[in-house]
Amino acid sequence: MARGKKNKASNVVVWVILVLLIIGLAGFGATNFGGTVNSIGKVGDREITTQRYARDLQNQIASFSSQLGTNLTLAQAQAFGIDRSVLQQLVSTAALENEADTLGISAGDAEVAEQILTITAFQGIDGSFDREAYRFTLDRSGLNESAFEENLRAEISRTIVQGAVAGGVTTPAVFTETLMNYVGEQRDFAFATFGIDALTTDLPDATDADLRSYFDANEADFMLPETRKITYAWLTPDMLVDTVEIDDSALQELYQERISEYVQPERRLVERLILGDDAAAAKARLDAGEATFEDLVAERELDLADIDLGDVTQADLGPAGDAVFGLTEAGIVGPAETELGAALFRVNAILAAQETPFEDAREDLVGEYALDRARRVIDDMLENVDDLLAGGATIEELADETELQLGTIDWSVASTDAIAGYEAFRQAAAAAAVGDFPEVAELDDGGIFALRVEEIIEPRLQDFADAQGQAESGWIASETAKVLAAQAQALADQLTSGVAADDLGLTLDVHTGITREAFIPDTPAEFLNKVFAMAIGDILVIPADTAAYLVRLDGIAPPDAENADNVTRQEQLAEALAQGIGADILQAYTSAIEAQAGISLNQAAINAVHTQFP
Image (tube, rainbow, N blue to C red; front, side, top):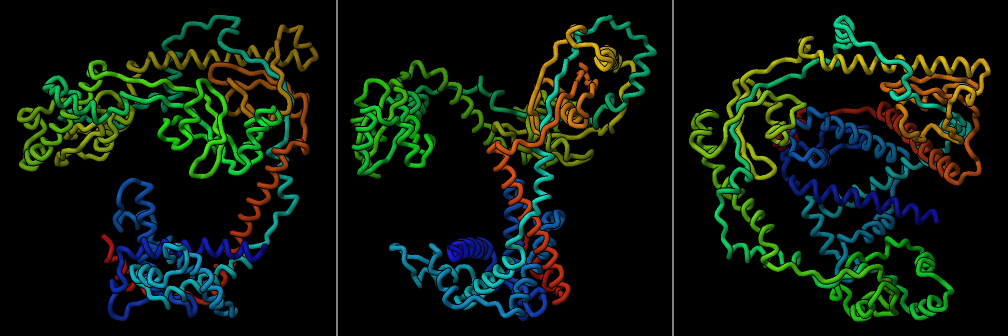
């Protein structure tokens, strides 16, 4: 069993190495770094090769670029610290490999060969090891067999050291129990909500002094964001739709291209349970009422989602189509042969065939056709617009000489109307500066635009005269919350003195067995935190923006030890903590052996690698 786990872990390591080699070295041939610069440094006696650094750096840049949706340059990657992260990881890896060498740990030829034989990229059509595939794959990666096998041997040895250091770590029981007690501890409480409708007195009218005082005390709420005065010209497909001439023959072609949407054969919502030789016996059990379809699915250790085929046509089901579509209502049919063996099919719904003739679909097709034609017109204009701007045309001249429409906007991050609703415009508006040369850019609906920033107005406080309406709304909300909290506190004082809730006309909402992770509807975010800070018998008023909550804590209980979810949660918590502790131990160990072995880096070699990147 231990051997199986080891093999599984090693296979993962091998695949990681192989993927990095094939993807990373695709852009860096083995001859990219000529002369005698083969290493960027070493830890102890273990060298870090230029190829290894280049490969890992390229992979990390590619991964980060994918997350951001843009191709990062080396300079941008360095700004994110990607090069330093890659270098640190390689130093740590080299330190562990050096330590494995020092300890005399090395994977034997048999182990290396076993791992190589399991890699599908090195296998032929029949699934067996293919030496030509092995040689070809390594050649494309810029490695020979000897170099790859040496890397693999080092990887396996390093994994042994890592496992010895970080493996077998267990979380102290008191640590897990303490955290679980915090997470799973329960509260029993009752509370009453005092909303605006609970006000027993009318609020006085706000005076100018009240509003001014509120305004001065809450200036952050009245700040205007940075505003950019922008002149722009733009054109979208919607602006051109009415000018597009409709070609009926083109509409007919479009209809035929989308015929599957307008002419749909009968379909059925189907589940398929593959049973093979057991299919007939299973159907007999169903017919006799000895089992349900769900029972049969569970016996196969499957969920209904695993066997759901969705909506299918008769053709989709192949040989089983006749049997399934022979049903006139929902039900179970089979056994029927499939490419995977005999199966039972459950039909959950019958979707009738649908056909929308061209005449009925024409209106939708016209809209789609016109928008598509408008996008093409704009696309054809793009080069001309770009040339005009490159020739020095202003935004106003651009609108005069093309179909683009001129506009102005006081843009801020809060702007969402018209062109400000497009993300491309928002990004361009935020990035542009006064005096920047206008450039044409595309909108996500096929439109185009260009802009010029006239002025940037820094964030500033609104004039009180302009903010009076907002100040009045804020003052009313604030005063309402104060009055409600005072009403709730008066009742809380009476409850504390021994008056019964019924005698006060209070209806309390009772909750039991509530944990910190629970959700209590219509309560503020800090509600449960404050409840969990109370002692049994405490009565507390929790104020909020538009309400107040009177809470009485009735009980405190430890986590439910009989709850299966809690048992599983504690096991998962212990495992996660053990992994974290193991990772911390490994990091400390790696730092120690790095210091012991000594690190030397060749900055000139590192810079040489960087010159290969755009």
